[in-house]
Length: 203
Image (cartoon, rainbow, N blue to C red; front, side, top):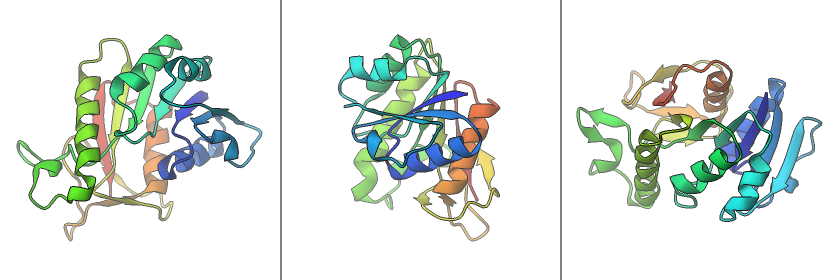
């Protein structure tokens, strides 16, 4: 599959790139400094300012699917969906956030008193992005939320998949490694099960 990955040089983006290449896909890595990524026969790099929508659309052309691992404060939903549609791509998978997951009926994690102020703007921007996707009439989108703690770690292949509720383990911890998140993300790329839906991944 020809995969275009927007935001390929970030922590999550690099792991998605590695997972896609591991599975034999061709990846077009798109970011401001994508050419700094280690060379690979199946990796194409495009240095693009994400605020240049025409350049982004051009970089996306020819791909079968678009993935976005961009910080929500750096790019609104239209800044991603617009170029994706202009490139003729109809399927978009987005690395989401945990803030919009429910911790109780009608209560999202970002709205709890314990939610850290340092992450609140990004979490609210992520919720806005998800709400915009839910109004998107054309794209076949999927929004993939990690668990509350999301950091580099082991690639185990053992995790659970949920829908709109924050996943926690037996001790109440909500976490997922970026490596295992990448597995779940590429599984969805290859075998779509959440068309026009959000799902979450955790231990």
